[in-house]
Length: 285
Image (cartoon, rainbow, N blue to C red; front, side, top):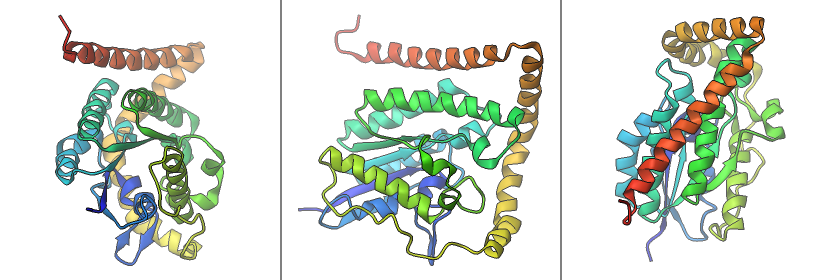
């Protein structure tokens, strides 16, 4: 009998950023892998820091399908919200294709909705609210598609862990080791509840001491600065425009229009997928 195979697709969260080990990053997916089955699990982490839904569709999905995984996780979307090219309809279409391809091949699909990056970074309200609106849109799409494809879905956008500073790394955007372990433990509980995990659950307790304040400051001054610079170059001009729009609507008392506009965009994205789904049915006219 061949070992079970687990392929993880996504961005820096799944790559393991925030949970350092000697050879690089580890992360929640690697921690989860050992508890999926009692026998050894072949784990392949295809996630790449900075990946967007397009990268998962075009680069990671073909590699994932070639592995013919028994379990496949797809956790992505935050980087899409941090780009001036954000388009919820395109995000929805890409995720639909990825989820469909993996489940049609027989993989158990793991998905998660994610917290608002603006709040995690402590941005001012006028900057954080547009990002929160985008993340809610992505989460709404992930919820709908996860239900359609029978995914094992983790509501990682809520819970006390979000406000527990001990769960987060120096950059305040990625979980630290405790946070990654929390994600692994919660995913394992969901899988076990469906009879899909037979191994021992990951330990919630960290293996390594938390980074010192000086180590955190060194990271922020080196790699962290580069991370912020790369995203500011792409996002900042549009984010400032979004913030100005936010402030104008608040001054006029019309902020609800922005929420309604975002909700309408999500509805349109899901409606477009519904039309595509119906056209694919054998009895479609």
